[in-house]
Length: 326
Length: 252
Image 1 (cartoon, chains in turn green, orange):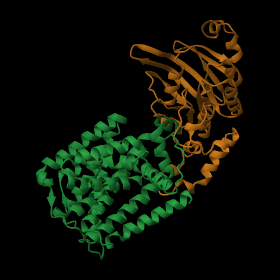
Image 2 (cartoon, chains in turn purple, red; image 1 turned 45 degrees about the horizontal axis):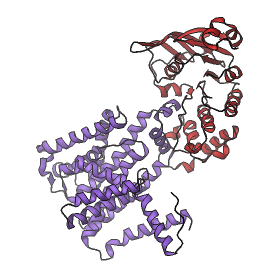
Image 3 (tube, one colour; image 1 turned 120 degrees about the vertical axis):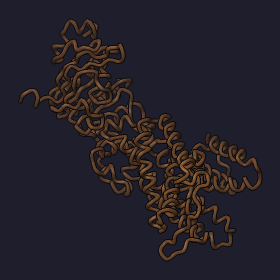
Image 4 (cartoon, chains in turn blue, orange; image 1 turned 135 degrees about the vertical axis):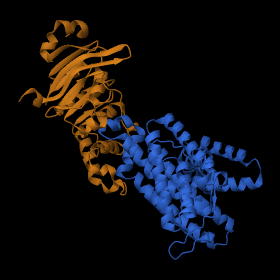
């Protein structure tokens, strides 16, 4: 099978599986976890655009995600913005405005400096959510967010909402995969690899970093909105540094610079943390060891590891063991 | 034509200090349009610093830079590039994880609106790739089009380094030791490339290899301890006793 056909088969099979799953008699809990996977994957893909294609390791992705979630929550509970489109636009604008401000500060630095500033910015936003009780509800967060209907479709059932998040994931994947393969995407890669040469060629390096940050925030904000509707609750934990770290782990595990790899990262992180936490209280420790092993033995992420394991399995099945190429 | 119209690059009283260390001291020089100028001088004379100031990577402590009659002293590097300046680097500065064609496309699309197109894959922009391959063909490297730059040999990388700057179609081309570290055979390939460009492009060349200098340039500026000690046609400089003493070692 040619590489291209193998791709098409994988995508069609994956899409068919994702579409049919809620009707195959799987537990509701499982459908919920998958819904969460689509949402986290959107956020992680938006982060991969920055890390994998612009070279910006953004630790404030949770702030962009969380601001989107809070915006839709505050909009719904205070300003009666209860429609689907209204809520979505609200969250996107909030995230883009936040990113626009963050960029002005953080993009004054590069590399480690950028990382430290984004950590600080994320903490500031978390501090606001935690302490500005009159707006954010403080530690109690905001409850009473109801999922709005999407046109004629009622989204209160888990199955209906599963499809909305799946569609949002597919759309984000298609858009970001196009962006990174576009002429603009090539410019981003140039900025990532050799900013000095890019300046010499006439590119405004700052502008491309800034625009990529804004673009990324649109999707991070979207994920935040979907997450708020999913939980029907928003709290400071959603925009904590822990949340940023989770996005980072999902992105790295999936495979940096791939966009689609983040789906596998999200699947592993969401399902493992849920399964392990029901088995043992020390689930964080086990999770840490697993992450460590993956990063150590497959630094390219799951997108490298999974096909390699698959080939090895098939290799054994036909009993032809090819020589190891180190 | 008077001076202001015919000058491609004009430096007026450029000085540069790093703390208490003076690197350049009152450098004034004019490069005419179409001229090929060499800048020579011993290590530490301030040649690369001068290039970085012309290109806008470093601010000068004093003095001004004029490109095509326009004061560009306060413009950032990318704006100077858009004003017609291109440069190569002493240490190869390419995009190692991209293919040769992608490297060249970055140079070719730098001033085109397509650099902002984000909702169509690059496969829709065939003409751009063909333009890049045509450039490669001119130097016999079309076979490397789809190879990652990282996988190229050093000699090929140095050729791509220059090709990227030529793809910018510059008014002024700054070449920082284009043959640095090259074996003689590869160095002559680079020299041939530069000789072929002698037609229109104004060039300023920093080079240690006197063979390359004499092959490519017509006028020389000699820098020593950050000052211009001699400035003129090749033959005059070659015969200048002071220059022979400080730089050429009397071997010419």
